[in-house]
Amino acid sequence: MIRKPYIYYTILLFVTFTGMWVIPSFVKMATDSPDGYPFVYYSAVMKDWGIIDYRNKEMPLRDLRGNTYTMAQSDSLLPLLNYRQLMADGRLPDSICGTAISPPLLRAATVVFRYAPRERKSPDKGLYILFESMPKRVGLEMPDDVFRLKDRIEFIDVQTNTVNREKSDLFARALEKAGYAFPMRWAIGNPNPRKPYDEGYFTLDAQGRLYHLKMVNNRPFVKDTRVDKDVDIAWFSMYEASNKRFYGFLFDRQGCLYILESREGQYVPVKLDIDPIDIDRDEVTVMGNLLYWTVIINTPQGRRYYGLETGTLKRVSEHAIAREPNRWDKVSGWLFPFYITFQESDSHFLYLRLHGTEYRAWAINLLLALLVAIIAARRNDKLFAALFVALTGIAGMVGWLLMPKKR
Image (tube, rainbow, N blue to C red; front, top):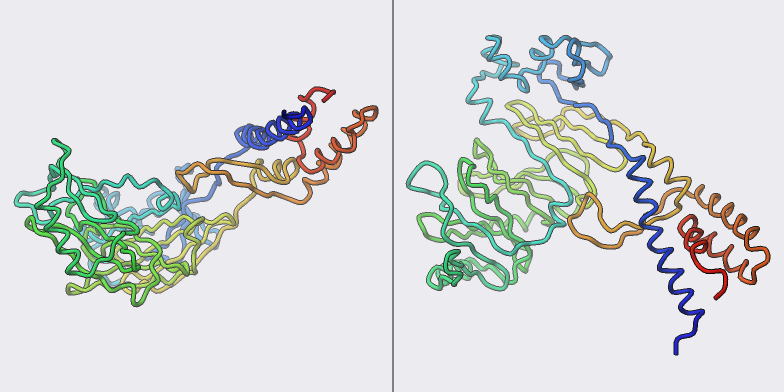
């Protein structure tokens, strides 16, 4: 038979545990706010950083020296960002910094890429769409089947829900011939049919080798990129660039970022000249143009900006903005020495996570413990109650107050 004290302590721990999740959640909901970073872009004309505040309609642009510029001036100083507006105004120059430009050339060289850790921490649906990479007509068409790739490759007809054995065996033989080792670790592609062309999937096999898989004229195309000989691959993000310069962005386990270039049928990793990142916590934004790439790394400590030369991806400039603590950071640092969450912005999975804040929050815990000791002065469990609240804080005090006085 279960004794009553065990029931009491079990319920107390459950209520306290719940409070360590619920109470901080409501406080965060009331006090948290998004980080207010300005829009920062590397200017090919100024050869410096431009800081843009679009809320200021008269003088939206300023440089690092504090000079401010009108809207028309900002368009001219950031021509590779605002070339559409310059076209509409009839002010688009024929060349920038000695490089001839045209609207089609500018469009083809534009790169807009974003990476967030939740991209890696998402459930794998297990079914993938494989387009015909060389369609007979303009545009991509949705296929009649999907495929799965785990311990083997199988194509499944979406109408009958049956395996297309002939097609599955055809691709299985191609994978085996290329040396692909099952089970696969991941497969990355872009299933959007509105993209201009298709490069299929890049998949990491059981031995850590990166393969390129696509369908050309209804036949399998499977090729070992051999990138693993130079890069300790952690992740890949597909980006079918308009100018077909590269396939996507490659992350290694040391925090380096690369583009996977296409050179005469070979796969060449080109490293971006930026400091190492934490792919489990940091967010990456790339805004590229004909001459320079602006790379933004969003970290818990702030934002780092890198200006890279488009051709070589070598660093020409860098800038940093420290993160300003918001109200939640300040409040949680006083109220909660630690708290519990089940969902975070860097993951699509639900799991228990313990967060620590500031040491000063323990002072509040001690004050609450002293208060409980005074309230429970005539109770035989006052020492336990004070120690329990000193360790668990507000959540423990709420749990203790909700429990009956007698056990």
